[in-house]
Image (tube, rainbow, N blue to C red; front, side):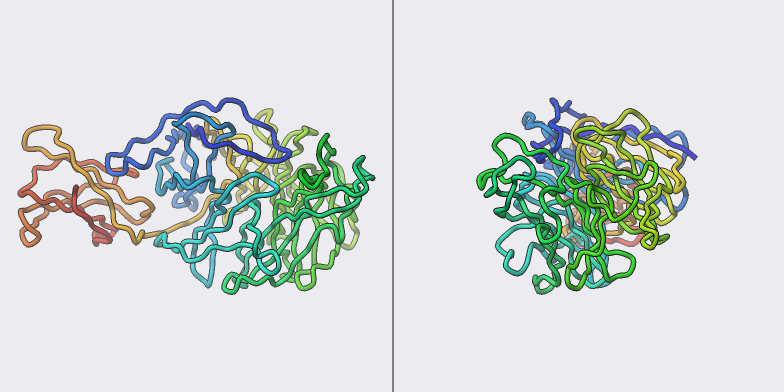
Amino acid sequence: MSYRALFASVAAATLLLSGCTAGEEVPQAERWDFHSRPDLNPPKFDFNVSSAPPEEEKDLKTFLGPKGQTAADEESWVGGLILDSAGQPVWARQGSGQMWDLRVQEYQDEPVLTWWEGLAQTPETAGEVVMLDDSYNEIARVGMGGDLAHKTSDLHETTITDDDTMLLLSYIKTQTDLSSVGGAKDGWVWEGVVQEVDIATGEPVVEWRTLDDVPVEQTESKLKDGEGTEEEPFDYIHLNSVSIDDDGKSLLVSARNTHAIYQLDRRNADLHWVLGGSASDFEMGEGATFAWQHDAQRRDDGMITLFDNQAAPRLGDSRGLRLDVDEEAKKATVVTEYPAPDDRSSGSQGNFQELDNGNVLIGWGSEPHFSEFTNDGKLLYDATFTGGSNYRAYRFDWQATPSAPPTATKSEPGEGITRVHMSWNGATEVESWRILSGDSEEQLTETAVVDREGFETAADVSPTGSRIVVEALDENKEAIGSTSVE
């Protein structure tokens, strides 16, 4: 089975990432224009599908946070998108700044929608993780805890654990000896900080500071002119993911600028081992060496997966990577590679998601693509959007009924005919729309029932009175939301 998707997307706000490739002028995309929601104009996504996706994936939604790489014109778009399998928006949020790592997670045994929101200028970012319930009501904002409670969290990690804690990253300016990398003895770095924070209390459960175990000379990054001062510290490590290891007692931490993954004790932050980089405790087998990587995760089969950027500067082709890490023999070997379908080099961002059916979704970060592969590395499709970038791409099952009501407006296409435009931003259970009309609430009668047609549905009716009401119906024809037509 294979299918190819072509997306048209997005010019947006400036992406400022230390060590990441600057983008050129972002082309403008064709945009949606909704009568019922003129405040929303997300980019259009044009799917060219040669065959259907697997049956078990047909209800999955795609989660993206598109953003541009240049400060473009007034038509720029930046925000969060949930798309259905046809590329139609299910939910769009815009106008509140960049959104990173938009995804579905679980908190207190309930599904939640989370993302990082703020000013993305790493490594000194200013933001926090936002959490919504399945009615899109905000239930929490999470940031660093303890003596770093005054600092906002970094954009790179937002993971909720089974213990209702959140894994977070941040950076602090720290004075240290930079002579080993050609800097001053009294130089300054951005020291990476990992915290596991109790969401309910905001208190850290465990904290790791990188200089305790990772000296500056292990960096693969080059000290540039002017760096290494208090005003411009050296980003020697650039942490970009934290995850729970399969024993439940350890953390896996990815550090881009040391080309390494660290296993830490989840209770006391003691360093167990280093995989990759100049201080690796493991022999790296043929093809197993990774560079500038993101998103290190332990999988159910015991393998470690990651997105291997191999840039920037470019050292090789970006790829998804599945490694067998033998902790007794201290050797890492390649199990499967997931290569880009073209000469693609992702200078920043990117992720590796394993779907429930075993397929693999690769988000290509600074390159405007995401791809799905079989578990053994066969490409199923490559999706492309024009311009911009996306930190991580995901596919999830997501059912939501917004607490805010639907929106409906009307136009007059002809004498005696009213065109009703109906939408419900974020609703996933709407199968059809019922239109009622009459001169008063008591006189409303059914005028028409029409199938939902994407984000916005339009229907021409001949109303029986001055008042028109629309009802969103689920698959059982039960009303789950209603609104008056304005």
